[in-house]
Every structure is written in C-alpha cells, then in structure tokens.
Image (cartoon, rainbow, N blue to C red; front, side):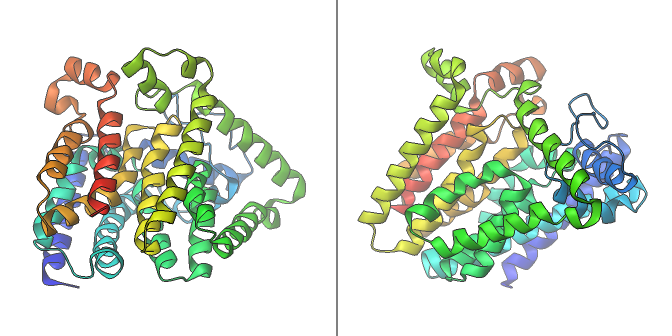
Length: 382
C-alpha cells in the first residue's frame, strides 16, 4: 500500500471514530436500517413473520431476499448494541476497501500509473460524499459494501476472471435486484460467461434458504419478498428519480403517470450508448469499466431509494478526480465543481431545514449526479 494511502486509512479511521462518538454523545446511535436487518434475521431464527411488518420506524419494512436475512444471522446472535457497533465499524472498513481498491484498479486498467496527489484526491473524495456518508453511518445501511462489491467485480471483469466476476455480480443482484441494471454493459460486451456465472450464483442464493426452512416456508418467504418489493414505492418518495426530475425540469406528467415507460426508455438509450461506445473505442476494458460504473450510478434515478444510495457514484467521483489531477481539463473541472454543488450539499446542517427541503425537492442531488455522469464520460474520452 502506498504511503499516502496509509495516511488516508488513518484519516478514515479517525472520521469513523469521531462519528461514533458524536452518535453516542447525542444519543442518536440508532442505526435504523441495521435494526431492520437485525430484526429480520432474528425473526427468521425464531420462525416469526419477516415481511410486511415494520421493524423500528414506520417505514422499516424488510424488503430483501431471505438469503440476505440469513447473512445477518451472526449479528442477530449478538446483543443489538454490540452488533450495531460491529456493523458501524464495518462501514468504515468498507470505505477503506472501496477507496484503496479503486486506486489500484484505476492505476492498472485506466491510467497506467497512480495519478498525482493521492492523499489530496482521497480527501476530496471523502469531502464529496461526506453528507451521504454521515447518513450511511447514522442509518447503518450496506451501500458502501455494495460499492466494494462493484469495485471488486469490475476489477475481475478487467482481469477476465469470469468466475469471480459472476460470483460478485450474482451476489450483488441477490442483495438488491435493481442492481441488475449493471447487466446492460455486460450483455452489450458479450460477456456471457459472467452472466452465466452470475445466474448460477443468483439461483443458489435463492434456493439456499430451502435447506434451512423447508420448501413450504421457503415458498411463503419468497412470495412475501416479492410483495414487499412491489410495495416499496408506495411508502417512499424521491425527488431524484428520472420520473421526478422530468416533472421538475420539463413539467412533463407522462412519466409520473407511467413511471415504467421512462425507465424502459432510459434502458434502451443506455444500451444504445454502450453499444456505440463499444464500437468506437479501441480499449474495451476502459470502456467497460466506465459503462459498469455509470449503470451503477444511475440506479438511484431508476427506483425510489433513500438519499445515501447515491454513494453508488463513488467510483465515478474517484475516476474523475484521478483524470483531473493527471491532466489539465478546465471545462471538465468546472463541470465537476457544479455537479458537486448539487451532489454533495444536500444537508440541513449546511442550508437549514427549510432551504434544504426546497433544495432537495428541486432534485439538486439527482441533477448533480447526472452532471457527474456526464463529467465521467467527458474525462474518459480523452
């Protein structure tokens, strides 16, 4: 590990420790998202109802696969506070892994060298995600571990390790099925072995709970899971989806009345862009890396999710920072700054509750994220 990365790891550890102290001092160490995972795993162990009942908050419904609940059983065997402390620390570990592996991947498969000022770039990346990271830590979700999974899967794709890539993608799609949007660039690139291995992994993950709960209970759990996913959009809203932004920008009501129509159109358009990019570029690895990370960053625009899911754009942020520090690109740099004004500042601590509400409902976070995507493609074309 380069010396500058060791300093970055120390800074991250200090940030996580400070965050924990503040949560405890303010009596806000709740980790409500983790509570949902912990409660669902505990209910699964007891044979109680897992789906359709709130755990903690009114919106705290468990909506993930039964296999994911099984993954949290080790936490359910611990007292809640101990399990929450471990989970909080693991979020910090995920952040360290994400940033260090991103640097290595970009050095090996994008730039050929480490771009200069690694510590400064790492600090800027942390600054860009600071608001989202604070929410992730407070809620105790698993988004940063999903980022780690995508980074490792992308690295496996670039190294043509189809077994590892398929295993990782299949696991990611099992945890959050809407991440299957990342299959678009893989299909366009004709990486069928990865898709086959991902399908096998997904099938194993779906069938695995049957060994522990029996066929009847397995069927009931998965039916309840499908119903929970279908109901998810009914009790949450987001001003940053493509549907919401189409109304904010254009005043167009058609996407609001037919939300799936715009998603289909976006999918078709992105498939065409990936195909065009594959045909025009001479470096398929670099092209595919950008396409996978773009599809990952676009996921929160397709489905109604919480604000912290925009952490999915962390790989693109690190990519853009690396490119900007490696060569002069004043227009791209200005676009990146504008993008971060929207992406990185949706916080009531910065604007106050009333202004932050107006800022959020205007789709500032989503708009900034889309500008980041454009910036990522701009710097990658050089």
